[in-house]
Image 1 (cartoon, rainbow, N blue to C red):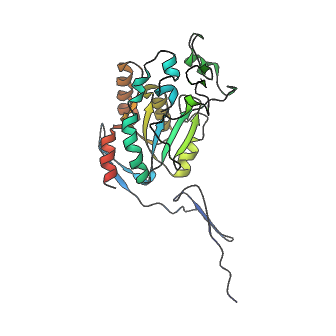
Image 2: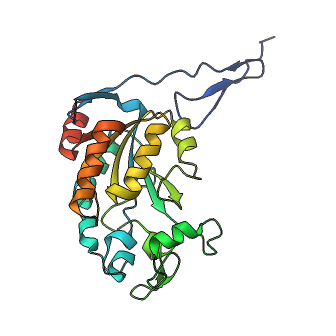
Length: 261
């Protein structure tokens, strides 16, 4: 008689974070992925991160913020400032995919009934109640402001969220508030976040701060971030990132680091 071999099944979303389960045993040791050191020129210091535990998080590169006829354009804000990350991100994203580093697109996407949106969030988008606000119709594309599934909430055409990329919907300025982002990152075994998007001093910074508070190692990719706010807001954001929350790098320095993997 040949003894029956117990089948082993991996349970978990990502290699290196899985249990190995058989009929008689559960192995919780989580066989680690090989360390892939990546040395990145950054400010205030050069950093070395493990590419196997790193993700690129791109915040709010959506039509309502970055495209003619979107919400910012409709309310009279110069949306073109928010388009500056498109070119460096379009160079960076394919390299991250080729290096098998996860890319997470974090975007606004409100419910049509706004039942999870507090008055304070509505007020932030229409302070005097007179301009087009969340979930209200914009004329150019007949799209509701940042409504999930509408044109305004879609990622700009110039950036391609690939089939293997991860998309997370948020409904606050911070992407960690009342979303699955933290659970996704932990199930992927991510400890380091490279972050870009818009607006640098608002949703990007709020998400960056919360990531730091949750224990992630955070690096802002400066030229992949932008804002329509005055320059002093940019200066304040960069100052506080370096002083309190993490590090700052540039897309060219990341491309150099990725080429060395």
